[in-house]
Length: 407
Image (tube, rainbow, N blue to C red; front, side):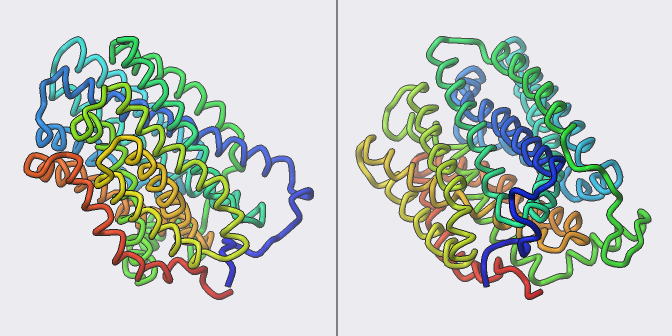
């Protein structure tokens, strides 16, 4: 069984122009979403210092963003079915942009923890809404192209994250206020997302598994997806991979600042190394998935992620630890996008299943920040990251559920 989401329907050269345009539009939206999120993560140490937060209090603050995403995702698939993926993505990005502006203003100008929490909630809600819709759109484009491309969409997200991490490091070194940085970035992300979403595939109402497109039928499809063993196991796999990725997003810069004594700018740059590893894995991973299939490739990458995270903690020196960070990023690169492809293997059930998998997966972002923050108060932020390899090893048993269903 190969890792291709759907059997090839046409050679790449014969793909209609609207599908190619949609592919490019989806990539743009993924990239800009990554830019927005990583820009915030790159400035976490600055916000922590501005608000004088301990690791535990910072973890609780980061919980606001995760809570927003978790609340958005159960209904995001239904919203995308009703409004279309393009409109849903734009509406989600409006919330992200407003949230970033509120975060920056609250941290720099108002020194308000509550204001930052409110802004992060809006960022999480908008990002969660956008995440479901752009993954549904990406899976639809992937099926029409007839080859694996979902990891490359997530690679675009990672490239945006690299740019966001670089901007964060540069802004920290130059002393750019968080408020100015995040507000300008929010405007750029919103304008670019609107342009990218215009190229999405034409919106047609998805009738669902029963052929009924009424709101009540869509709700029944969503409830039915919560009772499917494969969907739930795919969600559990995505949860662990999201935790492995999100732990680096939330804590890697802070862990290197605290554990290895590097500057805030170097901490942001280390996070950039992680994202570079993810980007390389997602770019090259499509070739590996098409050649060897989902299961063998994911078994290797999950092991690589566990080894890299362990090396990042136990290396004892900054340069060696950075090698571990790169391996960590490379190893976690395929888990989330391939899990989303697995949830969307059948187009008529894709919106409901992607919503379910996204909700389960994003629980990692809800539980991860406070868990690692409270653990970091006791053993240090760097040592707290050992939770990542301890979770990844047993997750190898879940990899077979990612295999495409028989057709």
